[in-house]
Image (cartoon, rainbow, N blue to C red; front, side):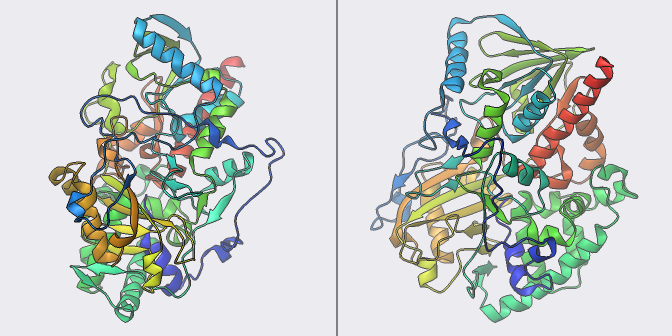
Length: 557
């Protein structure tokens, strides 16, 4: 999910204060716990090279492009480039060798079988966490990945701002995200607190009107009242199996729009809440299950959900966790550039056939790729027709600037709008207004769908610069580079992140939880209490690994 504006604003105006003090943590300093197992390890070098996806609009995001600030924004052009361009050094020898073998097999049309107890399809965080935990439990596992890099929707760029990491996908880690925190501890990854300059007001634009600070303060108090109402309603939710919650069907078929309409707050506050939740969840409030929202609130620790969910970034990039997991699994067990083309799951055996005719036989298969990509795989037997988790639309637009013009104007980079650009923030978090920096712009839900429909990839950056100029005046004159990242157009993602539609949890939840025979589902879409977050991906993979490890113990006994 994006940088939640309300989560940050609430720290200034809500009764929860900084929130983290209740957990005994201090966000003013980095979270860093030395690791005796992997001392001094820097896993970031494992990340991968160029994207060889072909076809129109393989739809790789925009390259970093020099911007002529004297030209009209509509003339800003950039040639197509891959999502992975210049993100990291080349693959290490182990992963690079496996990638080359995969490509050679595809070229020759080679067909041979490989056996493994568990086959994981997808090397994003869900698949890597699952494989890592299985490997630790002594269970033979192999991971196949369509891309020629690790991470899925986690991709860390090194060429947006010199000496800085800017995330092109998943970015934020919560102080209430135990799996991420435990892996950071295990792999010696340092987490830096998400901060904003003290005393800065955040641009809030609703109905094309920029709210003055005093009106913002009143608005935040109303929003705090509304979200406290939601927090109280979340107390009785079964966050691990929300479909078992009393009156689950009724709660699930109610929309978030219904709840907003019932609130005793101003029309302006309703508009702001709708804007916040549309951006956070990636879909219209009319397509959001009320039970789903209550589940993420409960899963995030009730009041801690609002204050602690987006507390940290990983120093060196979130991709470092992907690299660390792959290294621990073993490069020989992670196969890049090997998209699964078919999955057979009958009885107690499974078979995965990959591009190039490589056949993998095993006892269990874990499907750890986004639901939008399932149509690339032929399943036998076919998946149930109703098994289609809702995936929202999400776009990131990264702007490199030669100075933080927003600080010069006395405003924060963090903004909220119900217009075409949902949110902005400074991913580099610096306090020097004259230093080079970046601005992350995030568009989600209907606004993102409209952008994808009405503007092609050459036009979109100029249009977005126009919109950003209304939020952060003077930005255009200080732009040096941009990168446009339309995740729904990326072949192996085909969406932003998931959020359940009304009625979806009670209909799909049990299947996503227990799987279908020896086919298991992992990914943020399969962990409702942390849906849309890296934590959800990690926990879903860990859950399946634990289940398969238990089965293995019973078989051995």
